[in-house]
Image (cartoon, rainbow, N blue to C red; front, side):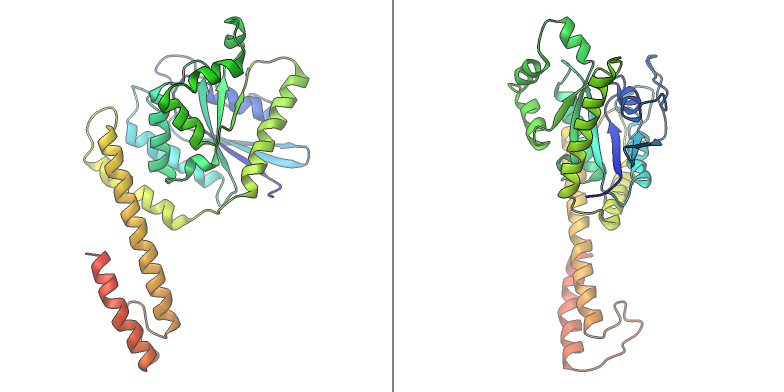
Length: 286
């Protein structure tokens, strides 16, 4: 388990991302922007030492801000990894309590095209404005169970392993604040135990495909079909890279220059490896 803890805050504008970051850092590091149309344009990181551990929190631009370009926002959110790689790290998907709708499910799909299909395995949902639930006379657990009846919400919670925490970011009771903070750090530690590692090459695939679509994109949001196409292209490009890496490794092992620039071994094994590699590379790199 890593001695450091790294969180990346994601979610739509107004959900309480910056306030959640300040809650974790136990200070006002991020500026909370509650003014309509106000948003941060770049990822921003701050750290604090808690119980001999360094906790890093990265705040990101809010999704679906009407004054921001979606692809520029996605690129800025992707850049959050520069603060925490090679990890381990986890995402905190921040949602205002009682407002879990299809938009949050769509947010999850955007996370997948930014960080890969398994991103929700490293995600914890943070329900903010816990105090609003109390004012409505409902227990927060009851509200979550009610939301679970919505199919898209159920899918999101299931994909996140039903990992969630509820926060009142303006809680003044120090004992309650510490209990909540310890809980979310324990969740992060559990995820770190099963950490599968950070792959720069895969991340570059996701970034390149997004940039390609950004050049021809028009509109305020991506349709479900556009998201599907992007995910499929990313899957294909990642598969190409995996195949090339495997073939290249076999060729190097056989003593063959991968690009044909240097052939430093000649023999049946080398010739056989090269013969097998050529059609594989040609097929997947047309």
